Length: 63
Image (cartoon, rainbow, N blue to C red; front, side, top):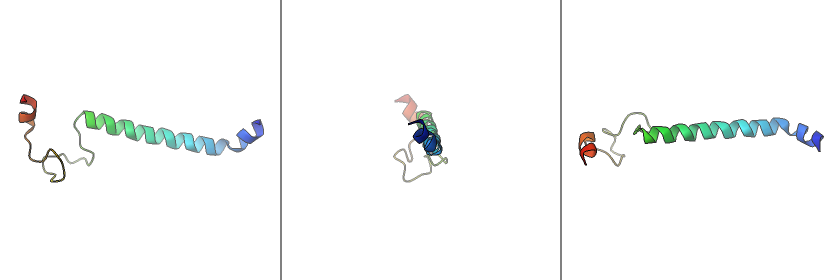
């Protein structure tokens, strides 16, 4: 049994590393979204594809 696990050790380590990388990206995206940062990095005021296009941030805070 131990020999089989040792044989698959590189594969297990690679999958674990990929899992950690994906989790880190998802956590970063979630934090950015909570902070109001856009995923494209350019902000939503000039983006016609964004749901917040043309909205004034001050009006959102007052409401």
